[in-house]
Image (cartoon, rainbow, N blue to C red):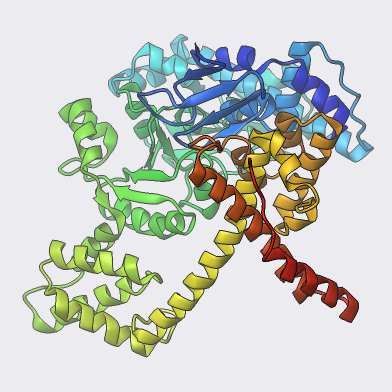
Length: 590
């Protein structure tokens, strides 16, 4: 449901941002603002500020910023609706009753029922683990050196050998077969109903909000399959969820560790590496990468050191790279997986291996090299050719050059020879991947065009920031600059709100942000406008000059844009006159 702007603003105003943030972050007052350690990235010196006057927060380290609603959304990983309802309840604001269609209400009721069933199942499995019938499961977990504290933290349990144990339990709680059939917990058939999991150690799978959405089970004994996951349901999509992310997202580390299985995640968390996650019985997907990108821009792959683990890493690397995530690969030899490594060499040694993790591209080349016999001239040449092709995957010449130097150094390949090979292959593959002069010239043209566009946007962004920080400047630009001079769509929308707010005497950055909550990229851009303050006083001569030049750039670009889109000769003549008058324009801050 989309709430009215009035009710959104009422909830925001009635939740003081300092009160809310101080419940999560230790704040200290300095001047008119409060400062603390940023909860969204790891830091030692406080760069996270909260402004009581603006009712906004901003981190000068990572750029996170916004109002009280978006703080709760980011910290708790809530949707807008979830964060808004929480704050409304806290402030005692009664929200309008949401109206659903019959179909929507049925789906909402089903989802609630499935969540409740999974919660009941998790509690039931945990209860069985500590009973005589769960002895095999509990012994297995203790043999894996898990503490009782860890068992409780991850809600580990046991499914009995009786094949309809959970089914009878849930039926006793009042759930009908029609609903149970959609839970993924039981199988309903004409010849009889039975549990999906039995005689297994159970691993509840939680979403980022700590709600149980599915299960994984490890069989006790020689049964198959060894590991079994819940099927796809209305709650559980294994390609869009990661085991352990509900805890890892709260870690202060700047990176996330990705491993292969439940036990690796649990072992790493128990050893203090609470930023570990694993995919759920499926290959790493684009959706996984996009999910991780919400919390970090750096991952370290800790897949098994065997052939299957290397293949999994090679599949994941390009997916993560396309998502804009930096990747390194951890070497666990002589051990197979993180659990085994930590048990034998300890957490400190594992931490050192993390610090020594290899660049993912160099890892790819290292794995590639294993496919060739380097004492065979023909195979050695083919390795060089394949390495050159890999280098051509970098479209940017500078990045490609950096990796060319690194590969040459790491694998003892003559730099000049490798560069000539890359250029020769690039020329045959066409201009997209070519590193010859034609590509460099084209890149130069594109770069100059991009720099010009970035300069125009920067001027608009800077002028908006000045106006927000120093409302007296509206008098200086009166009759010269209007919201229509901000031609970039997002900045035009913000400018209109800023100008309207100033005219009404109600300029309120925190309220303006309410309009952009639904679009994460726009929201972050707008939040940045309200926090990018000037480094020096406007009394400074350089700042005066910069302000005047910014006005000129914004107005000139606005007129140039208007001339390209003029509807007729009269309009064009008017624009030309304004362009001529612009040369004599003098904006003074005195």
